[in-house]
Image (cartoon, rainbow, N blue to C red; front, top):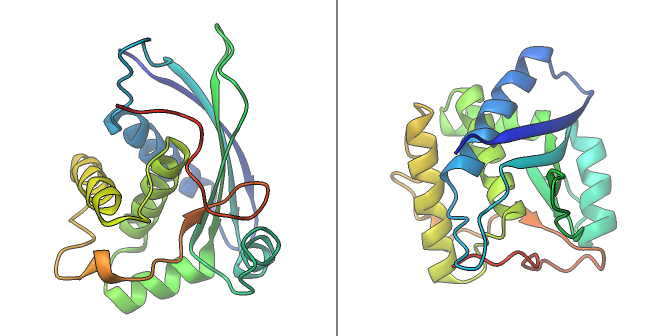
Length: 188
């Protein structure tokens, strides 16, 4: 099945047009590699999402306003609660990425910036698709899915050599009330 993805980009804070190409490829890979099986219906072949490529200050404000955490973070995912309309793209939601945090993390971990960007886009899109890492079993499934998708993009396992399941990760999805929650999309 061919997947069509429409992305509405907003870019500021040191991001380049080339970054949009990386984000698009990672988002498409995440959708193609996610387990979207539903025994009752075929998954949509057309998706849409909004991506904000911005700076720490903007993401800090979003994190404060939506999650009550007054600090910058690398990626925030805002799942859509819009119903799927037959014949229309499935609007997944919004992702915000903070350039300075991504650069700091990549430098600290000795990872290429573009690989770290790919990882966080895949991570954010998986949140929009209903994946989570609040419980150990969910985290293991999400990390395995991320690792498999990233391998297809030529990105080494971002969790290799770490105890990622024990980390208190910063990236989370948020809902209107600011409480992390699984979107209404069901996966089997």
